[in-house]
Length: 70
Image (cartoon, rainbow, N blue to C red; front, side, top):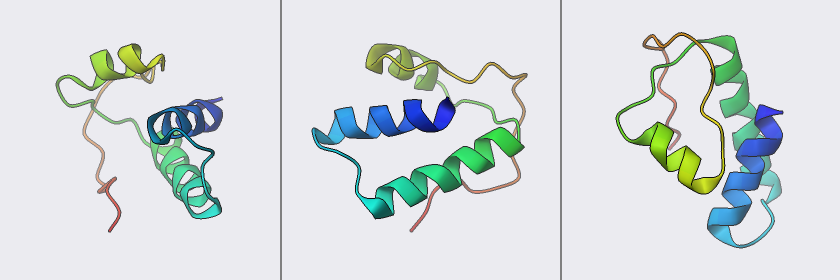
């Protein structure tokens, strides 16, 4: 479900279907998020609501991984 929602958000933001490379990046991000609880930075939950996405329903804590890719 998270994978589909993240893909939907990317497609909405880009106004086009996700590319194969974007799809792979979304799958990797989904694996990180579902494998570890993460703390949302201020403003992210509201942004996700605005975009029509649901924030993760986990107890927040800092993840030990960098979620940004080069």
